[in-house]
Image (cartoon, rainbow, N blue to C red):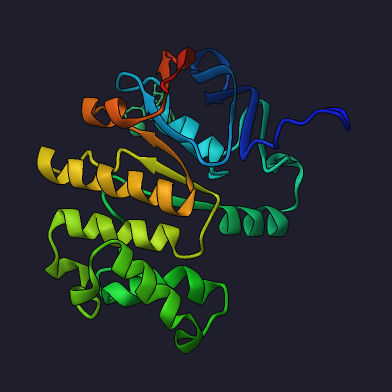
Length: 236
Ligand SMILES: Nc1ncnc2c1ncn2[C@@H]1O[C@H](COP(=O)(O)OP(=O)(O)OP(=O)(O)O)[C@@H](O)[C@H]1O
Ligand SMILES: [Mg+2]
């Protein structure tokens, strides 16, 4: 990049990123030479058959795992070359993760599940209170903030997980099949919530999915097959 290059810095940039699991003849090539840039504010569906490499790709983007070839840059930083402390801090500040099975802490209330990432950052419950409650309101759960997630429906639990992922206002949310465990109607409500958070907070979303609903709502669709990027389609 030169000084005169006016393009913004991608949130995440993959440069010929590959991932192999294992060594020798039994190794599995999960991703092969993926090159793509993801920019601020995008809403991207990551599609492809089971085993095509979607989760592996999301894990590389989020720095949960490292490529065995090529590079992954988060806000211009090659995560593999940062020391563990700097990499962990950069990831914790820049990225939120949403999972298929919600991954909430069942013994904590909705409030404390959403507060949890802020607690890890050293914020007291009192200082974090308004920010946590604001996020709980955005996902429509104000009436339930004292309840444990076990007392909520699947769709409501995923809303808690989304509030938890967004509470520190990360640049990027990586979501691995967030509607995969929900019925069609609840899934659509979650998609609508993610779209509205993308518009309101300008958060970037990369969402793996088997759902046509989600694919149809996305402004950009990345399609992978056998670990290779097959298609990168932008819709207006
Ligand atoms: N930890 C691992 N060890 C060995 N192989 C793995 C590991 N994780 C993934 N794989 C393999 O890598 C390939 C891609 O897996 P991945 O989970 O990324 O696919 P996916 O597109 O997310 O599938 P699904 O739609 O079923 O979630 C598969 O062949 C899988 O078996
Ligand atoms: Mg997967």
